[in-house]
Length: 192
Length: 178
Image (tube, rainbow over all chains, first blue to last red):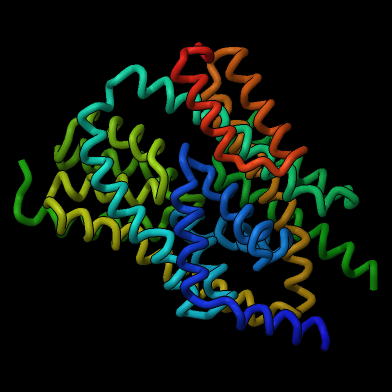
C-alpha cells in the first residue's frame, strides 16, 4: 500500500461525529483568549493525528490571509480536509453550537459581575499562563524549520516587527511574506 | 434609542466588517465600537469594555459571543442569533473556498515554494502574539515567571495545558501575581 492510499484510508475513517466532538473539546478548552490555536494543535496534530505539524502551519497561513476569526478557519479547513463540506460543517457546529449557547447564557449572567475584583484577578492569572502556552506552541511549530537559516531569519523578523517594531499585523504580513516567498523561490530554482 | 431598523443595520454592518477583518476579528473591534457606541449609542463605552473583558475570559468562540451579546442588547435573542451568523458566515464561506483551491494544487511546485515562504513568517507571528499577550497580562515579575514556566513546561513535557491555566487562575485569585 502506498503512502497516498494509506492517507486516504485514514481520512475515510473519520466520521463527522468525531470531528464534532474534537472541535467541541477545542472550543471548551480555549479559555483565556487566543489559546484556541494551542488546543487545535494538541487535538488535531498530537492526539488524533489527523494532520501533521506542517499541514497545521499551512492551514494557519491560509487563515492569516482571510478575514474573520482564525480559529474558525482552522475548524473549517480541518473539517474540509477530513470529510469535505460535511466535515467542515460538523467541525464548525462542534466548535460553535453548544459553546455559543452556554457562553451566551454565562455572558448575560457574567455581565452583572464584571467589576468583581477577585474575578478579574483570576482571569488575569489565566491570561498569564495562556501567554506562555501560546509562545510554546509557536516554538513547537518552528522546530521542523530549524535547519533552514532563511526560515529562522523570517520567523525572527516577523516576531521582532510585531513585538519591538510595534507594526500592525497587516503591514508585517504584506512586507515580509513576498520577500520570504521570493527567497524560497530562488532556493527552489537553484536546487533544480 | 434603539429604533426598529437597528437589528438590520447592525447585522449588515457586522457582515461587512467580518468580511474585511483580515488578521482576526479583534482588528475591526475599534470600528465596531465606533458603530455601536459612537454612531448609534446602543450601549455605553463601559458596557462595551465589559463585554470585551468577558468575551476574553469565557471558553468558546469569543468574538462571535461578544457580537452576539451586542446583538442581544439591540434585539434580544433574535438579535444575538443574527449577529452570530453575520460575524461568522462570510469568513466561513471564504475559508472553505480557499482551502478547496489550496488542496487542489497541493502537488504543484509553486505551492511548495509558497508554503516554505509562508510558514516561518506565520510561526514568528504566533510567538509574537504570545509575547504581546504576556506584555498585556504580566504586570509583575511573578507573572512573567509564570508565563516563562508555562512555556518551558509545555515544551519539555506533555502535561495537559489545562493544569497550567488552572494554576495561573489560582495564583491570580490568591493575589500572588500582584
